[in-house]
Image 1 (tube, helix red, strand yellow):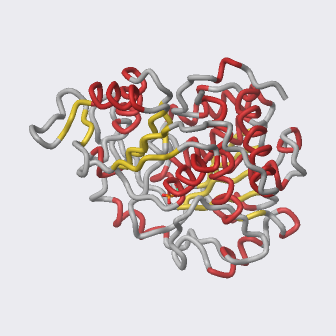
Image 2 (image 1 turned 180 degrees about the vertical axis):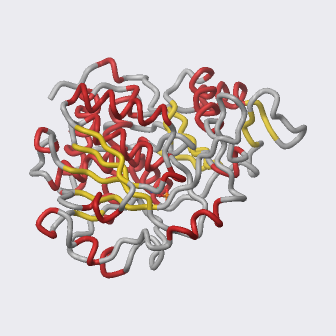
Length: 354
Ligand code: CP
């Protein structure tokens, strides 16, 4: 394993900003740190006295706690900042007197005081304008002299993607090469809630970067952004995997090594040119047509030898997206994924912070 100096100081906005080798390096570092954590080996020498500022526009259980615990274990501190309690960082033109502070100012202030800034923003916090959350992260990255980490935008959730790849790597004999050719299914599932596209979009990109055979299963109303699909097709060509879109959940699950069924919202085409907006008003009506898109034991039986792994980023809507028998069953690896948020992110922070 070679830790390249190139990683130092880089922003972590999307996995696609990195090569497969660079991702493997960060994941290998995360795996080493996972061993140290398990062996109770002190590794506070990695980021001693460093500060990660975390700006959470949206709620979180896993992301907040994995970053906080991770920074403590690496010798530093994670500082929780909640817009509303601080002046809400806003782009030029979106500012409200006495309520917001321009992103360019927030980024320059925090980057002088700490060592990295992590941000979560999606959904109602950016008025469901697809791409706006990612734009805010990119604006932070433009102004900050320290690395910016994407803790989930409306387009990408790279920290989840890293944890998911780490989990599949572990279930494939701790081998990146053995991911090649394995069947991975990212499937839409029913839920009454409105959820962003970041997880399914990163969910199809990440395995395609590792040469997996990727199937996206969803009703046509829930297609992902065409730019994402184009990138997945390109990665599949480069890495020797495959990609297909399937409209039937059961057909998609057939022979799968890993299935990842979860709900997401609608990206409809009613937006301005170049900006496609999910329309939360029409979502419940459309979603209700697909209540049978639920993961059951019978559905899991058609996966590879009836032993495919069940994945989910959590939180999940039990009884709607999935039956308890599957989520709590022997093929469920949802808590491995959640645990690996800690270790994968520690690998990323160890490589990009300094
Ligand atoms: N998977 C995930 O990002 O979980 P949280 O929303 O709890 O952070």
